[in-house]
Length: 460
Image (cartoon, rainbow, N blue to C red; front, side, top):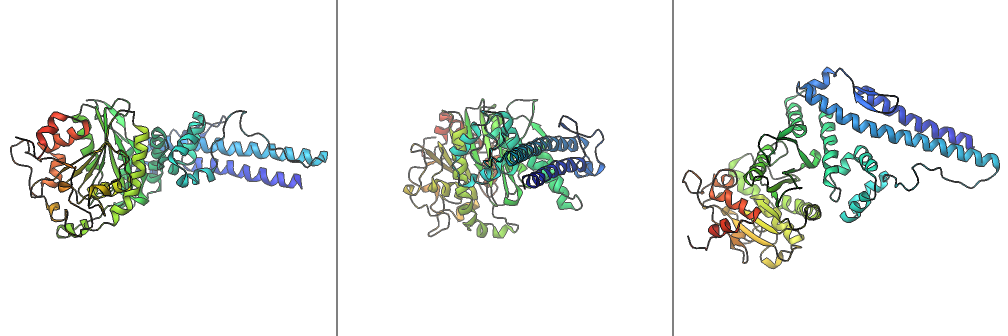
């Protein structure tokens, strides 16, 4: 019986190793005798086609796949070694008549094994501190293996250190590219988008530099894309930007560009996180904008995730670095609803916000975990969002511009002398050179002189 069981264990483990090797060969990877994995010298023309004809991008995808395959192969070999040791132990016990089972060691003494899959699957019900502590106890090699074996969980779980999330999401993005057929226009657009997420971009903290993008969450099935712009190691302030109606992963380049302008405008002293934590309302008929903006379901769905992410931001950002959470348009309702559920921020900015949050009618309805949070609001005169702000019984709560204790800011003028006003100001105040743009930056950085000039009831 021991011999039969051992043979079955060894066969199953050997099959696991062969499966990894077969996938490596299928993906155009070369496996050396020492277990190292590299991409083949000649790229598969089909892969180059999937990468939009860009051989460099195709090579980057294969490099990511090679790193993942290397870790998978090491894990499969570990399982094969463990099966061999277990079989030998069982056979020796059977021959000696000793039925006591002594597990064969599978890791060096004193080294903690990487968490089994059931441990990773338990993360949704584990506290962020618990997840962080679990990973802190690992060796660097074990963390690398965790990233390679469970990239979807690692890349999208609050509490996991951000460098690991970035590394895991490069794998997730490469996998998304490989999963695309490239046979139709929609697929080709997604491939181009995902390639852009893997490509280098201009460093917003210094002119002439190029950096890899820092993706903190990537899950197209959940419409989730969270990206860090800037350098957390040197930043003096951090902002989390939650956009509004019609935001999608496919259209996220505009939101990313907005964030990078704030990083560049601060000369690298601030970092901005763009937060797409789920599907936003989509409006293709301009006449339906207000109707769709009145639907609170997306705010109710996304707010709890934003609360959890704000906890992760608070844990990750260096002590003394202030965090501002900005809700623009529909994002204002998401942020306000999150404040009601326990958001953590040093400053909150409601920017042309649909409201103060679902069910928020009074400042006492907010429950920010920071009792000293400062709240600001700014809406340009004539912005169409005024039609839904604070309407009696409205879905997004009270008008943040009229909420007691919230500091109201003037939108001011564009740099060409025209007032920041009207429908175009809804996005213009955030994206065009203007008093309003500089005021938003002042909220993030804590520029008290600029803020004093912008306060609505301050003397001109």
